[in-house]
Length: 256
Image (tube, rainbow, N blue to C red):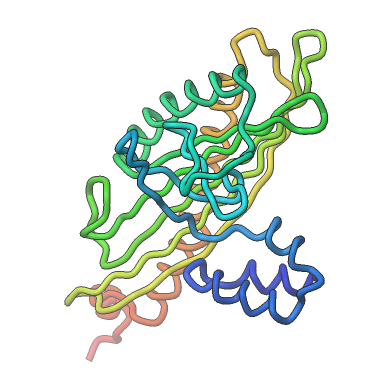
C-alpha cells in the first residue's frame, strides 16, 4: 500500500487517473484506501438550474451522482441522497459566495466550489475547490498556454467549539500541469503535485469562515512559493545549465 501511494505521488497529474485504475486492478483489496487517499484532477459539470459550473469530487458524490453547491440538487437526480443540515447549508452558501470573490482576485477567473458536511465528532468538514484552465481556450483571463491546469483542494476539519475556541486541521493539495508549444521555446511540459497540512486553534468570535479563509490564504501562498522554487526554479536551473543563454556563452569563451 505504501509503495502504491508513493508511486501515485510521483506520477504526473495528467496520468494519475490511469495509474490509479491500474493499481485498483492489481490491489483490489486496497481499493477503498486508494480511492480515499489519492487526489485526482478535478472535473466540472454544468448545473442547468442555476446555469453555473460546479466541481466534481469525492466530497459531493453519492453513488454516481454529484451535488451542486448552487442548487443543492444531485446530478443526475438521486433518491435518499445525503444533504447537509439547514444550518450547515446556510454556511455553505455563504462560503461559496465569498470563495468566488477570493478565486477571482487570486486566479482572475476559473471555477470554485465549496462543500460542507457533518462529521462524527460533533464538528464539520469543509472542502474548498478551485480549478483554473490556463490554456488559450480555457476559462478565465490571461490564458497563454497550449495546455494548462491548476487544481487546488483544501479540506478543513473543524472540531466542536469549546470555550469559544475551535480546532482546525487544513490539508491542502495543489496539482499543476502545463504545456507550451511555440517557436521560441519549442514544446515543453511541466507537471506535479504538492500537499501540506496546517493545524491551528482559533477563537470563533469572528466566525468559522474568517478562520478558514485566513488558513487557506496562508497555506496556499506557501504552496505557490514552494511550486515556484521547486518546479520552476529547478527547471530554470537545469535548462540554463544545459542550454545557457547566448550572452553567458560569450562570457565563458576565451579570447582568441
